Image 1 (spheres, one colour):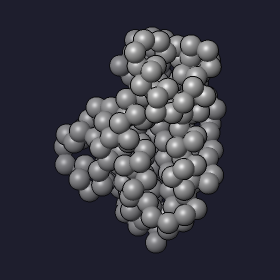
Image 2: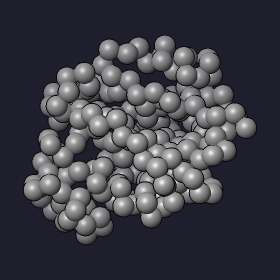
Image 3: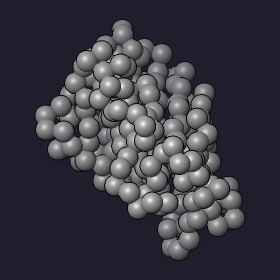
Length: 197
């Protein structure tokens, strides 16, 4: 697994972690849809979804693109993994639950990548009530949303016992692309390959 920043060459990083296996990319639409990696290996970006499941032993590399949304990787002890693109829409739609449904058993470990954090994510308007209703007011710091706080209770409820976070804010840190800061169409990649069986 690797999280790129604006200085990384995605193809080189993917080759390094995947040993030259095919790269699976999605057309991300802020949905709850998660697909298996083999369903994505035709034309890059042809499949609309926001998560990729990679079974243990598969030689492909799953790629999730983010600028301010939260990239989430969850793996089980067998080496199966799921990579998820988690914005507030996907989170409330159930993308995390859909991803975890692919990973059986206990002992799940999650890693949270760089995303816009509560220090910078002002979140006003009717959308706030949607998130607060689903995940509680503890998901907010004043007027700002913490995607990580909203996610933490959900992960605990879904058998994830260990959660690691890189702790970087894409808005604060110029090393990352941020749509909210710059209006950019550039994205970081979260690259995931599964373990061997």
